[in-house]
Image (cartoon, rainbow, N blue to C red; front, side, top):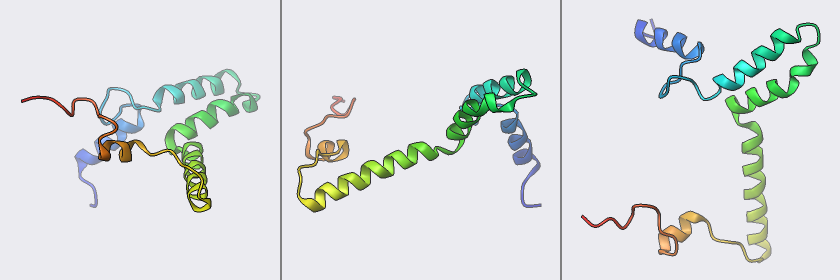
Length: 107
């Protein structure tokens, strides 16, 4: 077998709503809303499209990644044109302009 019995049991537990780090998976509450909507609107499932969209966004982050890619593309475009671009938090932290929490703890 490719997977041990323990890993199969863990996969089954996660599919039932249990998360890997918490008692509840991060998308399970959204899935419950979607499932409740489907149960209440069995005849007209089109009323549950927003819940379905939210659930799939929680699982796959498609909209989030599209937005991040658009922001990064705009940043690259502005840099090529020569416009001023704000620094990133990582750049600020590297040069010391931005202090990350708990970085100056005295031992």
